[in-house]
Image (cartoon, rainbow, N blue to C red):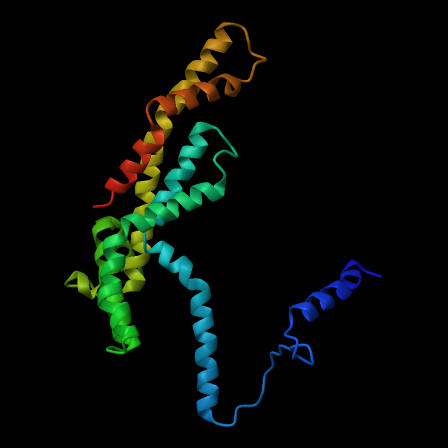
Length: 248
């Protein structure tokens, strides 16, 4: 008897104990495909499938339209520069990146809630108008952070007519250009963060070699020194402040 089969009686007993006393049979959940009786039913089914698909990729798209890309990449550089492979854990770094993203995007979140979400929930506007209103503060934020070179490259690659104003730039061009700009900025910040730690590694390696201690790994000496330096200069506060103020 396999392991799932041995646990099956206990599972059934737990379901029976959790069921109401008046229940005579176990509940059953079924998922099936039936023939549509009208074109309207088929249309509704396709809309539901499309909605589920959009919901599955929406979090990733929304993250790419926010400061999350820059923040999480910089946090990764900080972890690599320190030389601590598992400290802090990746969950902590991603969680801190999400919190900082929420902090930076507070004005846009408030504007979206006041101008798009609440009117839509009150049935004052349709979902199309609500989506357009929600995209306005997001587009304004991305345009402020987007570099001219990245935007020009995406317009040229897309082979679209040159936009007369920023309002004519389609989202399919703006979002990739914004992501490339964020990656570029994050790598510049990461390079500046790496420099002092690289100097410490080089100095420690040179000192150990001059002392003839070539069998001692330099990371065993440089890691405590880098941690002490990072703590003395209040590194997390400086990096957090620098990231937040880097968004104009």
